[in-house]
Length: 78
Image (cartoon, rainbow, N blue to C red; front, side, top):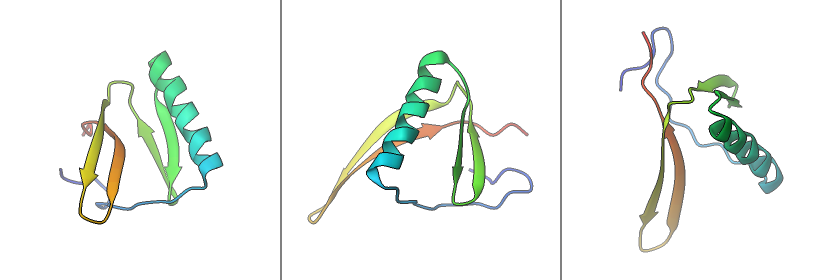
């Protein structure tokens, strides 16, 4: 997917302590439940997730580890 006009492509992972992660998940769940935009700042960039974002859960497994990703995807308006 091309980067939004004026913004560079990003692919980062940010670790959070469990307490901060829970707070973010609760805010996200509240916004999803109310059909509202979710706003979050990740590694210095403010992100706004629209209410119509596609929500999915991904599970990956290798010989040495497993991973679960909660994903939100949406089209960028130009």
